[in-house]
Image 1 (cartoon, rainbow, N blue to C red):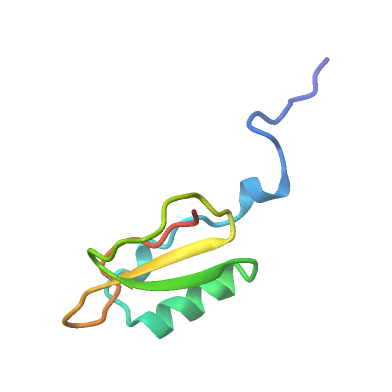
Image 2 (image 1 turned 30 degrees about the horizontal axis):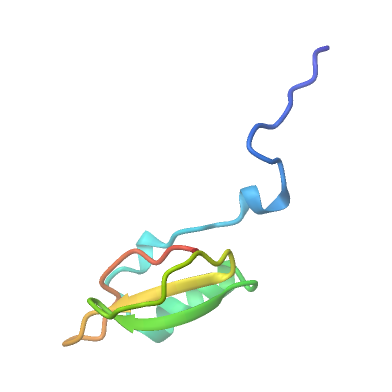
Length: 80
């Protein structure tokens, strides 16, 4: 008694950053560097908004969607 239990797995990955709203509007290279600085364990896929991407989740993938005209990040990148 008197001890708290973590809910939701309690693994180390529970504390890892999983989204980067702050990089929306950044160029893809700078955004990629920020994401890798926060999560060295992920790989980054670069796409344009509207591209068809393969379905499925991957806990080590971040998809970066850029605007076709400006090339700037247009959506919040997330792990998955």
